[in-house]
Length: 317
Length: 317
Image 1 (cartoon, one colour):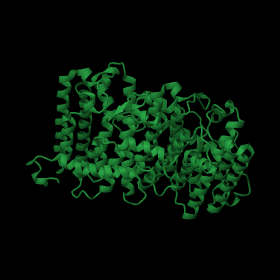
Image 2 (cartoon, chains in turn blue, brown; image 1 turned 60 degrees about the vertical axis):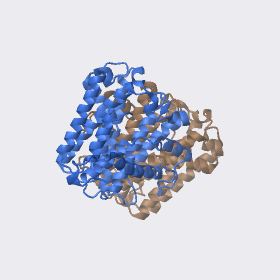
Image 3 (cartoon, rainbow over the protein chains, first blue to last red; image 1 turned 90 degrees about the horizontal axis):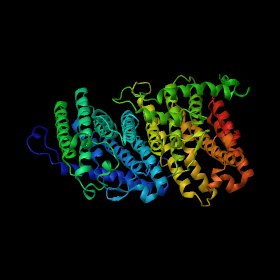
């Protein structure tokens, strides 16, 4: 699959083939773990109706960027990728559950009131608002269940590290905090600094958290870890800048969600702040920063991380 | 504070004095931990508006039954209560955050649509629905942040145990699962078994989880742990039976929330299923089961757990 270390600069990295294998693995794991009886040690099974809404929210062919970042970061820091593989797979699924729950809650009428997500009716449209609320809540808890298996497959100290990273990436100093700033900013003009702060929390924290969780499944040195943190920050911000660009230039069928929502909702975006051309240049600049950080990490196996950053910036949806 | 072990059967346990000290400790800890800069290691502070809604939801003088159960269970299993005290205090606050978030979401218009909670306007009435949704989401994440301190104050394996217990108590095999059953049961007649199943998840899981989290901060033997599990199950169910009774016999000013909501909402309750007198007898029966379990545990310091179970069943609000 992966080019031998020494040859990595010589031939292009086959991201699609690399991704296909990992996506298969993630989909199978999610299929297995988002079920009524995923906790055999528990006295009760999860209620079928709740699990149906949770599965609808998760098992829908999203891009799975966050799980891929977890797995790519894990592979970057270990010489033998079977080491820490179970922890990395669980972390990959856990970040996706957090992402999925955030979309479910974000789409609700009291938030973005969106009826279409990835080309399907949103969870609250399909199951009702109360079920959407509960499914989101349960998905967040399930993320931490996945990180704390009771079968000894993940070392306790590793479980604790992953839980700590995920909680901070998801909560008030991360994603939920960014959404709160977003909410408060509707109809207001934000400075570039304020917009960056919002996105660093709203989208960046979980993307960066994905990289750090993957890396924590190995034992990166301090220099490598700092570089991966920079990679995650640049790539996370680039993701949002490109999202803002696509909201303007793509149509709904390509995006799989309602295009032009940000402008309609009078939300501040990079495009509204700095214009389309400067936003596009900024995205490329962030991509270069991400790639430089990988170079700085001194890690040999960063091709997948590099290719993922490239995909994030140059994607069409 | 606490009677010497040998004398514990001789004089009545002073629950109020015992609780006062622990409640002070919990209130001070929540006050300190539910703040914008509770995560000094993070690059960003939590946004002020979000933190305000989170604090409003948490720092409001609830009964703090769950934190008291955590601390009482911890004291029951250790001879020196300073051992594991930091973990137990964090666990106590974490379960309260989960409880608080569940109330915030539960009160929202798409769920119970309640405007009054503990004598105050509910979070969505005070801050708007979107902020209530986000505050609840962030409180759930914060619970796991509290359980994973980065300062070395809680041993990693202990962090992992607590995260695992809390996630399962809160999620689809616990509280959120119970709420989903509750939601689906409105307007339906439930059997006693189905009603019990619902409540074991909805309220029982987090109450029992509180006991188990507290116990996990020490090193209880298998027999003691099984007995505490039984105690938690009986006490958790008793709590809900009494809740149903109080919803019928108490008035709103005593309850601090709208009384008679269950009947108005056509929700199945123990009183609607078995009548008032049989419900009251059932609550006493569950109390006896809880006390027998404590006796069976063989633990010397169970006076606080015993007194809490008694308070749960014989409370007026």
